[in-house]
Length: 219
Image (cartoon, rainbow, N blue to C red; front, side, top):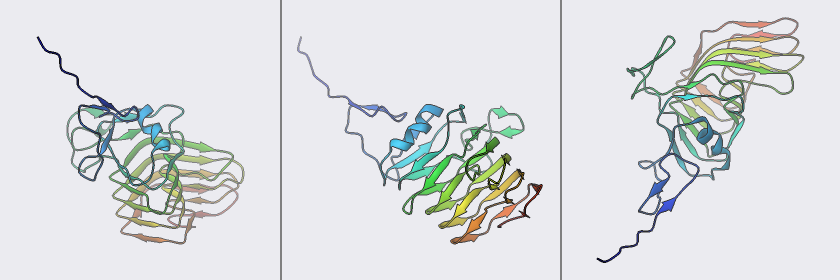
């Protein structure tokens, strides 16, 4: 009998990691993410990659503060998903959630970076060192069709926001439903500072700043 050799291509960072064809990446052939470990590996991803979450992800204690250096991240959430249940959230093949973050998902979203269809639920973000928010600390890129739910607590003079801490990019069709609390720093329902553009977004959470300024949306 004759033998046949097959070349196997391996990308250790993502779920669809093994193939008998060269691993290609495009807007229609995204690298897939299924676990918190793979999510965290996005800090190693170069710009211009297309990445998509294909399963619900339960965050670990170390999950978050990821740098989006200019890649395209699709959180895999589409309203109206049905299937398995997590608490009051109805999940399934049309709706994937990132659950239980204790740190911002992204530290920085670069100018060419995009974040879409991302649902963060049951977040419990706390910080006593730097400004904080569930989706990102600083956004210079484009965010669309995302939402955050949970709580954000800042201690001392640190700023707390319900969506992103600082926005210098574009945000559209998003909402924040977070209880935001700060001791002596600013507390904002959506973002502390906006020098970019925000459109078709809203806030439903509560804001409390014990000794400083609280703002329902920006400020």
